[in-house]
Length: 198
Image 1 (cartoon, rainbow, N blue to C red):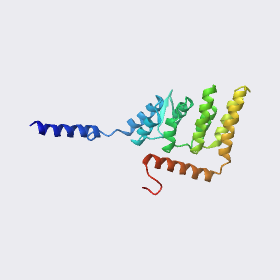
Image 2 (cartoon, rainbow, N blue to C red):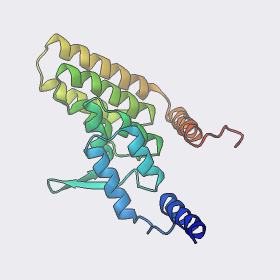
Image 3 (cartoon, rainbow, N blue to C red):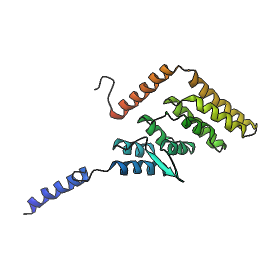
Image 4 (cartoon, helix red, strand yellow):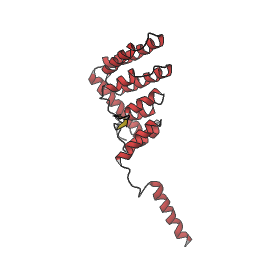
């Protein structure tokens, strides 16, 4: 009698660990998990795991009565030095067609020394994945006019402006091909496949 009980218990344990019989997670719950993970400083692995389960990288979240794409939360995390959520969203095809995204990253910062450095990395990532550079330059000019000519501010703006101008000089078709090649490469890294599909 004891020998028959052990295989049954092992089967129950296997199915519970493997997730068989669990209710599927709704899209709304997955999206909320994604927003919560980013908002609470989750790392790239956590955010990627939730995206792999089917969360929408373009989901909107509400804060103070305003609704924005979750990439804005990830940009905020990036300014604090946590670039993982932003990388995960970008690698999963987050929509960068909103012209304000780069402007938000480039022009809206508290400009302390650490955040300036982190904002540069955020802008670099957004440009790498195809954010439209034009609005970034406009936002930089607006932000620059609100600050003094302190040497650190001048250096910060010069670096960001240079990064954005280089991206702006790249033809749109070339940028499109480069961005999609980058995303394809990221996808192959995530799935462990090479370009031949093996």
